[in-house]
Amino acid sequence: MKFVKMHGLGNDFVFFEDAAGAAKDFTDLAVAVCDRHTGIGADGIIVIVPSDKADVRMRIINADGSEAEMCGNGIRCFAKYVYDNGIMKKDTFTVETLAGIMTPQVTVGADGKVSLVTINMGKPFTDRSQIPMEGPAGPVVNEDLVVDGTTYKITSLLMGVPHTMTYVTDVDAVALHQLGPKFETHSAFPRKTNMNFVQVVDDHTIKVHTWERGAGATLACGTGSCACAVGSFLNGFTGRSVDVQLYLGTLHVEYSEADGNVYMTGPAAVSFSGDWPA
Image (tube, rainbow, N blue to C red):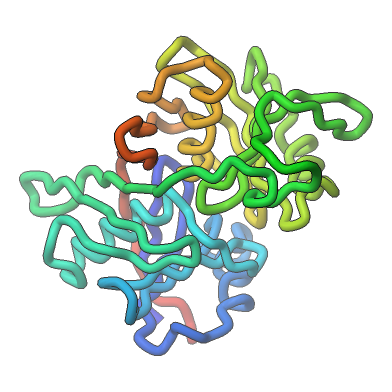
């Protein structure tokens, strides 16, 4: 099977095209392909399949074999892939995901290839039941959560997938591999949660390190970046226009006052291509 390895600021994926892949189980393939010792190595695989609801459909399977609703970095890579490979011939198109229909807009460089992608990520959902999270109805903003005997102030919301964040003075000092899974599997989150540690740099810049549900520590998380931008606004730390600093670069996020949607702009890149044995 032909594959293309891509990444969005270090969040990496292996792409496959499968015209008959709408209902296939890709669990075993994802686990084998994503293994960084014996496979290609990735945070997940993305399968391009036809859609009867949008121009094209994206299926994303995490490294542990679980299927994700959405992925911000993944859909930027997806948009570049389908445009650069002629699957889509227009600069704005629709993509079916488990989180709904997404609408990427691509910016094309002088070489005819996509250089930047802007995604309308939709509206964040802030009610506890929508995240979902145990407890009384209402938003989860600056709320106490006890994790492993320590009380953290958290903010949680649904940005296609559930995201939780806590604010720290130095994200580089956070023991991400130790704390991340404890938040992810906390009993307060019946469908688990992605966990973000956020450092406020100034009123329009934040720095984010993310532990992803089903993938672990990643170099970048698009939905997480959007969620943290929204959370930072809700906590009064930033305005609606936020630069999110990640390990390998920056995403720009706009939380629109006009329509309530979240718009993410950033790059996507091809690493290499090859054949995976069927």
